[in-house]
Image (cartoon, rainbow, N blue to C red; front, side, top):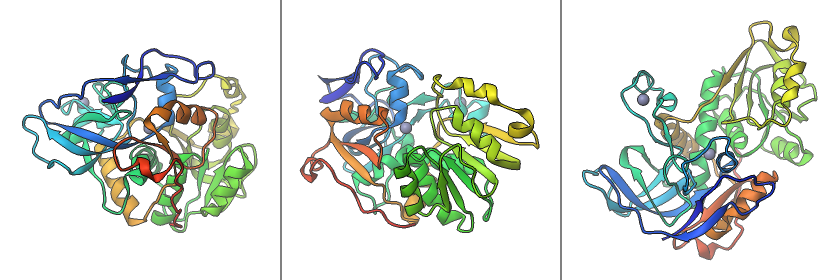
Length: 358
Ligand SMILES: [Zn+2]
Ligand SMILES: [Zn+2]
């Protein structure tokens, strides 16, 4: 099978082709596993963190943790799915199942947590394996292209919103407006219709897009929103938006940081922290780590109900490096998806699905 493989960590600013196209044997499904013929796999910012070593992967590794495929073979004991069924694979590859975190429903915090495409091979390939109890049925309304980006950005966005503990009518801020934030905006409008949403984004284009999708206000991270906010979700890789967000929280407010790692470049902004302005009055900071199976499954149902139809930009498997480089340079308008399996190539190189107002 063809696969895009990461063999060594590298800096994408100097090396824009970190992945290599290689021919590998089709993997064998183990006990309780499925072999999937991969149809689509979405590209995620976390893959830049893997390639550049902020969340180091096993090497060599096939990246990709938002894959849609069809069951091609069943490993010994696998019985939940039939050959040909469509399933999705997300960031959580496995957890131990018996530690304190796992027993409390927090398998995302398990010390044995393994991530798809980082600790085990992922979906930048024609075939992959997945444990059947960590695979998801995909609601019928989604095409393979639309479903892939929901598996990470959507699921982690859903978890961020859960951790916000927002009540209908409270003000929500979003700092950064990438794939996950678009989806959080749609989810919030559906679940909390009376909650105004305030978007902080660097470019006017992103801000205009946010208003188009229903944000009550959009500005730069240093702008003052018209009112103080109850909850803010930060999806940026930087520190300055964190400091600005803390300033914009109202007393008792909570900042949820949805980022696997922060970049070091602007860390000196933390020295600007002024306790009474940024932290006093019982302000809270909470990070988001990984996802649970519950997050993925519940989000897929919610996405079907709203319905969410992500905007996608398609690439071939061989163009994975190009997709990653565009992500690195912040050229984001909709999710980047690799079309890998048969039947997806004929749709042309760029497909922008119609956005639906939530
Ligand atoms: Zn991801
Ligand atoms: Zn565990």
